[in-house]
Length: 274
Image 1 (cartoon, rainbow, N blue to C red):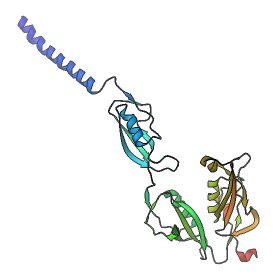
Image 2 (cartoon, rainbow, N blue to C red):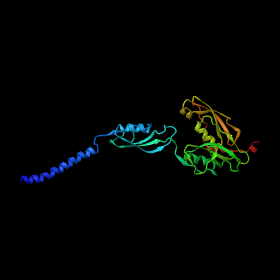
Image 3 (cartoon, rainbow, N blue to C red):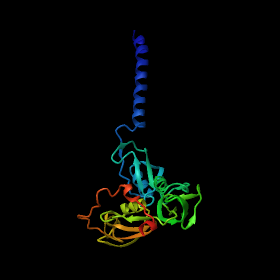
Image 4 (cartoon, helix red, strand yellow):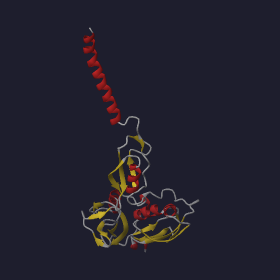
């Protein structure tokens, strides 16, 4: 009887021992009850982020890069898992860095597009408009050439995102002229948008009163312009307007409907004005 009980109990004990040993191994393997809190790495360099993660038994892995002028080059702009999440030691933390230079892209073909189409294409792919130049051509505001640093740039040529392109546009055969837009109350970025719509260029930013930082300049608004806005004053396509900015924006707001493109599409010919 005793031997029979031993034969029955032995497998049970062995099985229980195996299960208990497996549980202990699994608990140790999965580091049950042990966790590290992911730190906030945004704004740190890769070396700084890696060092901070190593101190918490975590590992850094760069998976992508983006480009921003507003952030330090090579700094962390995003992370996964997010800061504050608790993870197991040894876990990889995936990082997105701010690239030292913008990515290279293909230059689009802008010739034969309208001014509005060309500016829209440039905006979508991350290029800027440096200047609008005008030459005699029957098709008013049609792109007849695209320039980069003063030289023609061919479609599909490689160019860095964020670079500025000069659009050479048709001015018509009769000296088309446009009204002087009212820029007072607009920010610098809004000024450029309105001038593009009006087929004009930004001349000189004469001064920016109270602008001590980049943020001040970005938020500053136009307090004066030359020439002044006048419904009876017309300018040749591609002419420039100088502006004065101020960081004291109290009471400075643009007139209603300033961003309506139809306001800037009224052209007259020089003959008609005379």
